[in-house]
Amino acid sequence: MKTLKFKTNINCGNCIKSITPFLDEVTAIKNWSVDTEHSDKILTIEGEDTITTNLVIETVEDAGFDILALS
Image 1 (cartoon, rainbow, N blue to C red):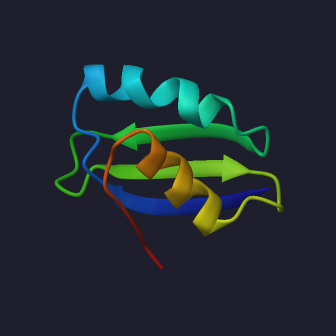
Image 2 (image 1 turned 90 degrees about the vertical axis):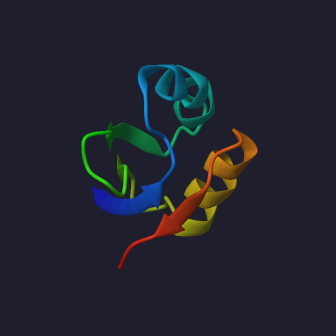
């Protein structure tokens, strides 16, 4: 299992509702969450080893949100 973290602008329940179908469509993602209390709105992705940073960024951007990979 691989874990990736990203800074986003997903900051409320409605934002989470908007992004859910996009992230749930990616079969390599097994679990995800957004810490809306954190100032950087950290998106944590847990998934198969095949999941890539670029795939997550593309998916979140397609949903209309800003995203930046954290090292």
